[in-house]
Amino acid sequence: MSKDFQKGMKQRLIVVQVLIVASIFLLGAKSFDIQIFKAKELSRKAENDYSRYITVKGERGQILDRNMNKLATSIDAVSITACPLKIQDPATAAKRLAKILSISQKKLQNTLSSHRMFAWVAKRISPDQATQIRKLSLDGIYFENDSKRFYPNRDLASQVLGFTGDEDSGLEGLEFKYNSVLEGNSVKIRIKRDGNGRILDLDKKKSAGLKGDSIVLTIDKKIQFLSEQILEKTVKTHQAKSGIALVMRPKTGELLSIAHFPRFNPNNFKGYNNAVFRNRAVTDAFEPGSAMKVFTAAAALEKGFSPKSIFFCENGTYRIGTFTIHDTHPHSWLSISQIIKFSSNIGAAKIVETIGDKALYNYLRSFGFGSKTRIGSPGETSGSLNPYKKWSRIDAGTISFGQGVAVSAIQLLSGISAIANDGKLMRPMLIKKIISSTGKDLIEYHPETIRRVISSKTAHQVKKMMSLVVNEDGTGTKAAMDGYTVCGKTGTAQKALKNKKGYSKNNYISIFTGFAPEENPELAILVVVDEPRKQYYGGDVAAPAFKTILAESFSYLNIAPKKNRHMVALLSNGEKN
Image (cartoon, rainbow, N blue to C red; front, top):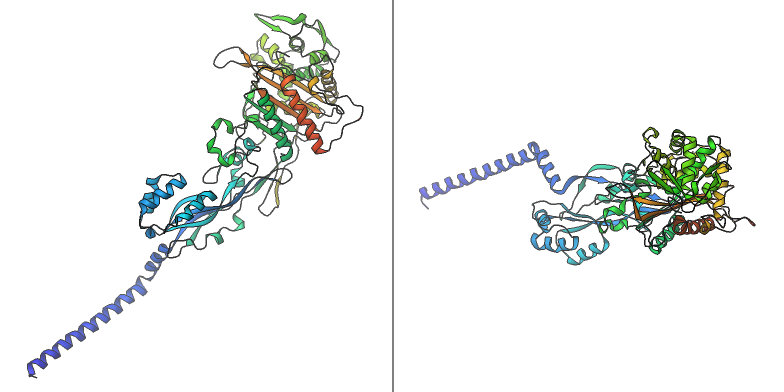
């Protein structure tokens, strides 16, 4: 081997050694840089690849009836997540998922095509949808435990309860009004994912401490159910447009039932017209017809008249200015008691002419008409009662028998309950208490007396007047019940024409409202039927429904009849009886 060759080999070895040493030095320097100078940055980047911050909301609180039966609750559900990097064919996956979930295929495809480790696909899907998606066995698609709102009694009290939306926030009814109470607390947390993008510890993050508070209502599930069933039968029998039925405890103002027909299923609210969502017992105002006459009579008694005070009823026709008031049957002289018994429009108008517009207005306001009751349900109307100084002579007359004034169902029942409650007006109660997720009472609501409207003596006299209606020649015979003393009043109010003056000759609202027993009223009930066909008088349409609701409620509550007691019912008919 020549010296030149050896020398060349030696030089090459030296170069290789230098390169190796240089590489080792560079690797060491790079390692030092990574481990010392860039350690935090790279660690944070790795952490971000397999973890991220999300907002977690606790389970929504429940809505319960007075006996702690569940009316609205939360049940286990499934949410769908994805690891887009694991999905080989985003277009096909999006097409198959979008069909099951009924969502935008294009938007989902964009999500699944992203270069991310994690993405939400759909939250709180139905068990059927989850089953269909599991059968697809798609790579990169995962299932996470979640919860969704559920109404176990389907359409029971649906207008009262309302419903929640896709994000589990209240959209209607008490779910909307008390959303801040019911919704769980929210926290921003860091979740970890495995190599497939699946969330590892989300369930642990959803602790019981995040759960929302629950609301206990005054509603009784059983009375609510029977009220709805009887109301539905009444509306269908009379081919009416809709109906409302309320049940209240006069002594406390507690509402045991707020029934509507038609109803809707809040578990599938998207399948219904928005108009059916309203709690019309609170949001809608209507002319009460002759149901208003009991308040006119009460005002007269408070102004010094007696039940035997008489008024000339003009034999059925009475002219006020250019307007003429009619009675269904002609009468000459009638006492105040008889005006109520026979539901005389002319008699009511004559009473107001005697006591004056101001007196009637003040007492109607005192009974709560023209003001919100503050029941705690969204969208409450105050009704319509113009100041007496704006009344014309005919306005005063028509308001006395329930035209030219608009009330809500809750206002009307509250006013009737004040007569039942010895003249004291109670604030309507719908919420009994609010409890924590552990069952601890946080806020408890108690019966509240707003004011004394009329004296005990006047209340007693009005009850006695109302009792005359169930006599053979009265208007309330279809409300009679053996063994109980019942007081009530019917109304048959013509509906005002839309977008023009005057009243419809074909469309009526049929009303019956009352309470029982007379001596110690346990329940007050209101039934309102909108636009019944064929029959439309309050005594024919609403009174039988009132009677059935009262009878079944008394049976359920074990309120026994008294022997040898004649039932008393007071009907109120509007312009026509």
